[in-house]
Amino acid sequence: MKKLLMVLMSLMLLVMAAGCGGSGEKKSAEQPKVLKVGTEPTFAPFEFQEKGSKEFVGFDMDLIRAIGKQLNMQVEIQNMGFDALIPALNAGNIDVAAAGMSITPDRQKAVDMSDPYYVSGLTIVVNKDNNAIKGLKDLEGKGIAVQIGTTGADKAAKVKGSKVKTFNTNAEVFLELKNKGVDAVIIDKPVAEYYLVQGGKDTAKLVGETMEAESYGFSVKKDSKLTPQINKALSDLKKNGEYDKIYEKWFGKKAAAK
Ligand code: GLN
Image 1: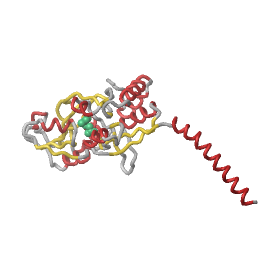
Image 2: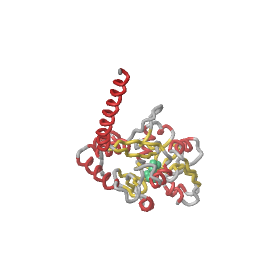
Image 3: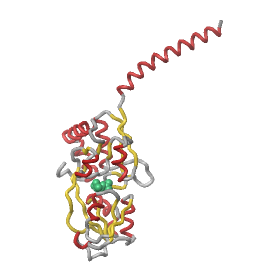
Image 4: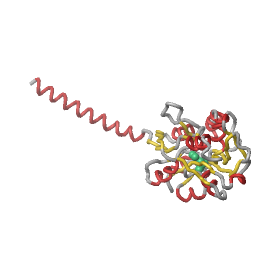
């Protein structure tokens, strides 16, 4: 008898649990969906990892997290090679690439890009003791280190007689310059400036004019519903002051152009 009661009670519990499961299911439909973000985290101050930390920090990381919040989505960021981001979008392995990616016609053929969120440009970095290179013209026939798949790599390839060395990360790019494996680096100006401030100025310096006006955008798979959603979130963040807050946190000044 006691046994039967126990069986009955556990049956009742099971039914109750199933009931809860039902309402739980309903709840989970309202729960934030995951926004899978890909990045290449050697691009400080846009995306990087502090020494000994796995956390992704930087301007892009804060901005995409704020966008995720606007969209009621849970942001999950993963690390991949810069040249792997567009293939990963097209394969559906990630939803968004947040990687200081300049909006270019070529990329716009392969993926959708959001409205611009940062105005950038390319610069040349050389060793401090190099007084021969003062601008792009002086790079002819010289060794140039760049990150694979970047606009800097495109620029370097167009320099007459250049010997271009491509690397997976910007850490390797700067190291190659320091080790005098190349004469110069072509990289995004804000990243070069951050590198100098972080200690790079002991051995390196910027030269020449800022080249190529470029704007960064988030990349999304072609014709994804996410693109207008991201643009709307970005525009809301620009209006409500959140974008300015994030900008000031990383650049210590107000955005001149958004
Ligand atoms: N802005 C450059 C590009 O889009 C570099 C980006 C990067 O190295 N993360 O190619």
